[in-house]
Amino acid sequence: MKISIVIPVYNSEDCISILHQELLKAFRDFSSWELILVNDKSLDKSWEKIEEACLLNPKVKGVSLRKNFGQDNAILAGLKLAKGEYIVIMDDDLQHDPADIFKLYTECVKGFDVCYGRFSNKKQKTWKNAGSWLNGKLSEKLLNKPREIYLSPFKIISRELAQEMILFKSSYSYIDATILTLTSNITQVDVEHHPRRNGTGNYNFVKSSFVFFNHLTSYSVFPLRLVSITGFSAAFLSFIIAAFYLVQYLYADRRVEGWISLILLTIFFGGLILMSIGLIGEYIGRIFLSVSNRAQYSIEKIIGKEEDDRHSG
Image (cartoon, rainbow, N blue to C red; front, top):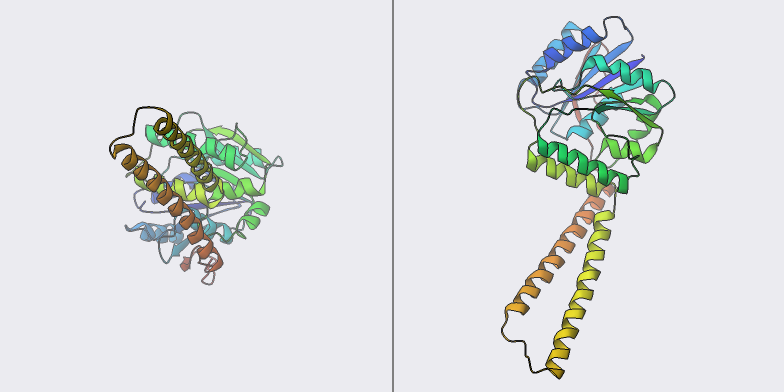
């Protein structure tokens, strides 16, 4: 098997049939490939559409998870089942053109572990573009991402790298962070980013913010260090303010009257303490989940020409 294509699916019943047809068109002259559609417990008829694709095409394998485990964990489930020498990861909404897969493949086989698709013009909302930019900048600082590389959801990885990636057992998986942790042998090629063909995106601002926070705290202790630095800075500032008022009290006629300053400082530092405790608690919770070996995913059903036994990650 030369190429496996892993696509996490969530509430995309309107896209799956078209996506399958586009892949058939792109691979009409290339026989050594497979498609793995991982249903992340969709609430619509996505699984029925996946079953239809499996009946029509023996190269398609459908995987149904027992519950919604999140996009990254669904990808890991697909990576574990993929048999290709190179594995494509792409979205289910047709914003990634299947015809561009061979651009990624041609570049990656030159000896790279990963080839990302770089979008010259992203067809998405402005706040998502801003979020992608911020995520990229933080990845440069926290994960040593090369500055010129864009962390695209459309990418191809070597089988050797995929086998190492599935060994990571974090309950809060982040595919791109795992890649950057394992290799720096990365390249990219320019591809087209298309508008979503049907339906609406599954990530609104709130959901995207939660995902961003999970990614930020799962592979770096930087937020914890930032809180520590902020705490020390606040303590130093408090000492300076206290010294200033003490000098005023001892050597000047002016006196600090009222409770406004005291209340404001109490609220500020009380909030800072609670924020710090909350962040520390978040890390402790993640440590607990890691040592308790919480499953990354659990497979309910696999359909296709070569059906596998049930798996749990």
